[in-house]
Amino acid sequence: MTQDLLFDPPAAPVIPVAGDIRQFPVRRIFCVGRNYAAHAAEMGNEVDREAPFYFTKSAHALCLSGATIPYPPGTADCHFEMEFVVAIGAPAFRVAEADAMRAVMGYACGIDLTRRDLQAAAKDKRRPWDLGKDFENAALIAAITPAEQFGEIAKQAIRLTHDGEVAQQADLSEMVWSVPELIAHLSRFYHLAPGDLIYTGTPAGVGPVRPGSVLSGEVEGLTPVEVSFVQAE
Image 1 (spheres, one colour):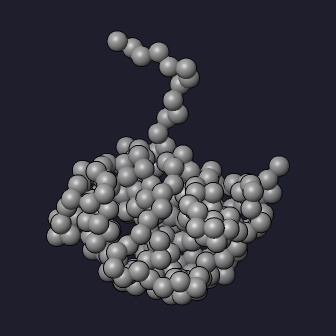
Image 2 (tube, helix red, strand yellow):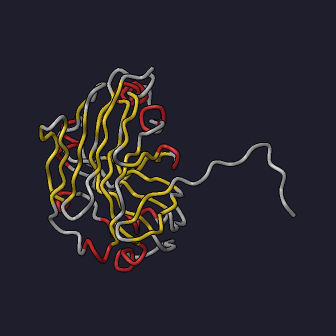
C-alpha cells in the first residue's frame, strides 16, 4: 500500500565517485573532535586519549566542492576546518579494529565549517554544539576516491589554502585516533552502514572566512575540495 505523505521527502544528498558513473548517497555525517593534538592545543584544549568524541551534522548540511555559498547566517566568526573524510560502504557494528577497514568504500577531502562564536557560547554554557556545527553548507566535500585507488593511509599530506595562502598543513599520520580505531569505536554505539561519512578531524591552523574568501583543501591522492563565499542577501 502506498503511504500518503503530507509532502515529498527530500532526496538523499549524493557525492560523485571518481571513475564511476554511480554516486554515493549520504545517510549520516559523523565528525571527530580534537583528533590532531596541535589543533586541540590552539583551541585551548587537551586531547582525550581515553576515547575519541564526536558531533554530528545533518546529511542536508552537505555541500559539493566547487560551490559558491553565502556567508552563513547568525554568525560573525565562521571558521574553516580541513578534514580527511571516510566513506562507509558496508555494514559495521561492534567490529574489531582488525576488521574495521572492510567497511570503508573510499575517501574524500572535506571542510567542516564552524560558527565559532556560537560554538564558544554553547561551550561556555555546557550546551550542545548544534548551532555552531550543523547548518546549511557546513559539510563541504569533494568527489570520493575508492579505497583501493588511494591505498594505505600513511603520511599523506593534508593542507588548506585560504585566498592562496597556506593556512593548515600536516599529514595523516598525525591523527590521534586512526581510521580503524574510529570505525571500531563508533561501531560500538551505532550500526554503521553504507552512506555514512566520518570527518576525521582537522589539523592546526583553522581560521575565519569572510565574504570573498576562497578555500582550497587537499589530501595527497584525493580530489581537492574548493569553495568560495559571497555576502548573504
